[in-house]
Image (cartoon, rainbow, N blue to C red; front, side, top):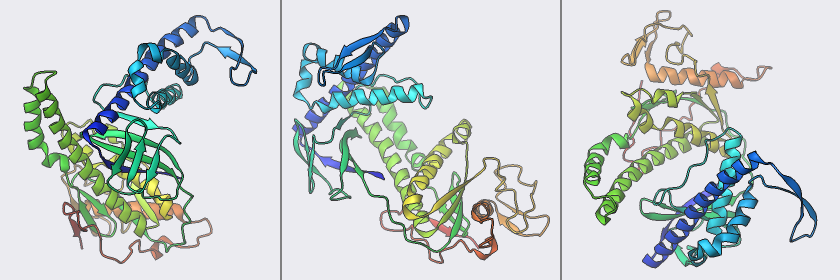
Length: 417
């Protein structure tokens, strides 16, 4: 199992400049390799020649082709590096090498249909570079970066005495971070009592089958006025000026704070779910299609539907929990959770509560949907031998919610009865 610990760095001005140079080397190498790959691929399509040659290291005969590959791109770059980019020797050699490896993976994903065609990297956008294994050292709160030296980290590595795979240095909101990838042993999950829960996501609240609604922080909506002023100030600055750079940094800081609030809230909520429940029922949402609604797009993206599901799915196995995703067309809001009768009264999102025509039960729209998602998750895990019944499961841990901890003042938990 692999995990990444992202730690903020305390750099001096000289160290920050050296990191920016290394990130520039990675960007230039990536863009050069992208141009070379495109030209080499067109040449190979015209005349796909193949032959035999000798490996310089082993001396064995190998098959040689002019089809562009990652190794061939790195070899060509090493040959022209001294003449065209002599200034790259001032930074670590890992930056251009790992950048070309990233391009190779990008083309692999492109030809496999998993991603689009690679695009050139822009200066100042997502500046980063990666360090290969053996090219860095970690000691307590110190990290050694080649050609930069020992830099301070704001905290120690979360996984001590664990083999590290790589270190990626990134710049985010004009601050530098180190993302340390570690290889961890597979967790030994002890047996835990069966507890199920359903979660219905919404733009204003997330509802659970326990009768709780957790308010979405709506960080982007709250920061809109401040962001509007910062963007207006940015538009008035002259292109290429230092004042425009400062104004752009202010805009980036606002966007970064919004993203941090959203991700922090989802991290705490998903951690609460995977540590207290063994079965979690959610629904499969077409977030891309929903975001095309120009009236709800901002609220939908601000609520983080996709990020919520992504975090649940990668955290659940480590805690012995299981995430059950209901079908996209499962009518979770329209089914009565008491008798199973489907209603036709929910004609719009404005209807927040309704009564069942069959049994007369009163339902809160979102909580009823969460209960149906829970029932769907439980029914999908019942074995063919009928070891347990869905009616025997409470799906509640019996403990009050612990979401209102220190540092989470933006969260409000309401209990519906």
